[in-house]
Length: 476
Ligand SMILES: Cc1ncc(COP(=O)(O)O)c(C=O)c1O
Image (cartoon, rainbow, N blue to C red):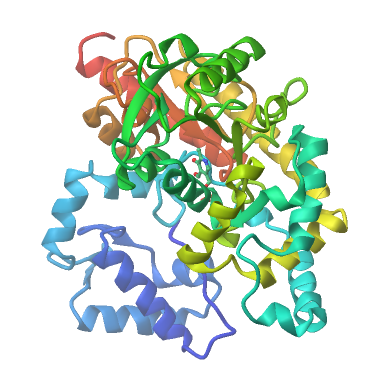
C-alpha cells in the first residue's frame, strides 16, 4: 500500500504535498520505472485527502513526464524518470528498490544498527517543561560562559548516581562534563598521549568510531583480542608501555561479554606494572536484563581508571552530554583541554539534565526503557531461534545489541548486499575487527530503535537472504 503523511498544519497546499511526495519517490526510485500507481480513489483513501487532490497531483506529474496513463491498465511511473547515477548507485548497493518495495514502510530497509536508542520514547513532555523552567529560573551567569568542567548541579547529582548505580568512587570535582563520550575519549587521548611514540591498547574488535578517535589523534592502535568474556589480559603487549588501555568491561562492543573480576584485576595489575591508565567506556551499562549489573572497574582502582560515560544511550545522542571521571592528578589539565576544545558543554542543557535527575525522572526513565529494550531483545532472540535455529546468540543479555553467529555462513560484502536487497540491514563483526578473519560468521544486530514487528519481519527477511545464499552456494 502506498502511504505518506499529509500535514494540514502547514501552508503548502495538499495537491503540492501529494505531488512532492510522489515526485521525490520517483526520483529516488522508491517508485521505480514501470511501477503501477494506485488509482486516484485508492491513494486518496490511503492518505486521507479528496480524490480531486490526487487527480490534480497526477495531472501535474503526467504533464512533467514522471508518470503516464495506460488505457485500461492504470497509471505507471514513466521510463527515464529517475537519475541514471542514482539507479547505478542503488544497483551497486544491491537493488534496494526491490528491497524498498518489500519493506512496505514507505521505503526504508529495517536497520539493525547498534547503539541507537528508541528516539520515540524520549521524555519530550517532561524535558520540555524542565527546559522552560530552567530558562525562566536560571541565574544570569548561566547565560554567559561557565566552567569548563560543567555546572556543579549536574556534577553533584551525577557523582551520587554513579556511586549508587555503578560503584564509581569520585568527588564531583573529578567529573568533567563533555560533548558526548566521543569528546571525552578524544580529550583523554590528547591528555595521555606520549608525544614521541603515542600508542593505545584497544579491544579487538571494537567500534570503528572509537578506534578512529585514537588514530586520528596520531596514536598507534595495538589490537588486543577479545573472547566471549571480553578483553584477554594475557595478550596485552609485554615490553611496550601503552599510553592507556581502552576497554568496555560491562558490555563489550560488539561481542557483548562482561569482563570477569579475575580479568579486571589482571588488567589493573598490568596498568600498575606499566604505569599506564585504563580507560573504561561504560556507555550502555544501565541496561542489564539478567542478574545484577557488574560494578565499574573505576571503583576497584580510582587512581588508575578513567571512567567515561554518556547520556546518548539512556536519553538521546542529541543532547551531546557525556563525561569523564578522572583521578585528581589529571583534573586540571583535562579541564584546560576541554576549555580550549569548546569552552564547555551547553550549561542550559546540563541544568535541565540535572533537574531531570534530581526530580527522579532519570531513574524512572531508565526503568521504563529497560522494560522496552528487554522486550525488544526477547523478540529478537525468539525470532532468531525460530527463523535461524542453527544460529548462536552471543553476548550478555544487556545493552541494545547482540551478536549472531551463523555456522557455515560468511557475511561477505556480497551477502550483506543480498541481505540489504531483501530489505534489512545488519552489520558484520568483521567490519569492527582490526585483525581480520576471526569473525566472518558473525553479525551485530541492534534492537534499541526497532519496534517488535520490525524486528520479527527483519529476522524473517534475514533468514530468506541467508537461505538464498546457501542455495546459490549449493549448500542447501
Ligand atoms: C562504544 C561506544 N561508546 C560510547 C558511545 C557514545 O558516544 P557519544 O556519547 O559521543 O554519543 C558510542 C556511540 O555509539 C559507542 O559505540
